[in-house]
Length: 196
Image (cartoon, rainbow, N blue to C red):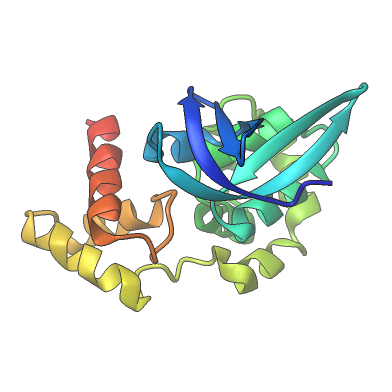
């Protein structure tokens, strides 16, 4: 089983990338939010979930271990396959998913393409006792309080965004607070651009 890959992105599509690891190319499915933050030719370390399906081996890549944990938790829910779980994580940050389950926010979950009312209800029931582990692993909305994102918060406020809006943008970033400020700021502006 492959659990982690460190390599260079050769090609990048909406939900898939080809990663060169010492001359071997690995095709991985990734959340859309992550793909939007990556660039062809850049180096990346991905946490990988290996999925065996009908004789086919599929790899799903995530920037953070907590995202992979959320993916595994989602596919444990009856009726949620890997592609739908990937779509969920491509649409919402782990912290938002944790909050939605904790608040029993059916409406928020049904805004995700592929998640109807019944599936959302099933998610709320089956994940009710499990999401606390994600919150402890870093999926709780604590990214703004970390020192790594204070500089990004200040930058967004200096660009004229209200504090609440800036915090909301930071919560939805698919990259970690340890990434360079320039990369995080570019991704934050991409998030804003997609909403415009």
